[in-house]
Length: 356
Image (cartoon, rainbow, N blue to C red; front, top):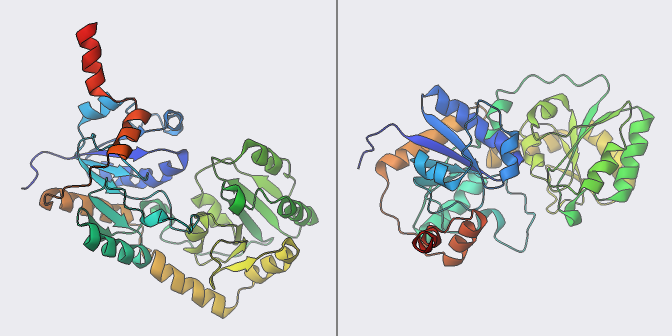
């Protein structure tokens, strides 16, 4: 049945690194004249929003706002929030958890999955056939909109290497003592400039260790707004962070240390003794490496027009207008976990009123 009133939108996030995912959507929604608000299930995250961004602080505020569409950059979303639930993802699939379903874990909360490219669309379409309680539309990823159209890149006079690292200790370049020593040595040589950014959930002791490396040719950036740094850098040094995929979309090479899933589009090393030669190779990439990077982009995120947010909003509105009844799993345990996290037990509140 067609929807009559002007739709309201909620951006549902958890960590600060999801704010750059929601902001292109917010810009698109405001451009269309729609009402949009944010809700953070980690309260501290709200402090990172701008004053002009509407933040709903409590569950009751969300219920009063009564959104028609909830865009979620989290793995789960409160089932008791009004509106259809749209999964927009908090990163690319990079195989951090090789022993689980990871990116493709169907938790039974979402009505619509807006996928990033063919290598996520096709698996979700197969899952759609299996579970039959959600739709899948390939849209591209809103976070990448500000990266496009790509600016012509002129290599820096002194090459700039961007360092990015995940917080998972067993996968993390930042936790690797020998890697930090090698980076410190290379930065002191002055042949290259280094920019470093770490995951917001990184161990504070590791952050302090990276900050201690700062010198004329090494700068640490405490930010989650990575796109300006991507543009400045010539290549990236990383581990198994999803920032690798974001950086590769510029057709710039990436060197990885002990990547969980080494692939032809990466220059992966397993020994820090190889670091200097690997960085040199990335700064002068072979035609084969660039062809492999192009193949990876075509499968992962082929959209280069900066309009993924537009496609996400269009897909959500179309679903809202034409949705079918799609009963979801009961999910009692997960539903209880969300209510516990958000301190939302309306039945208990009623009982308290009766006895007060």
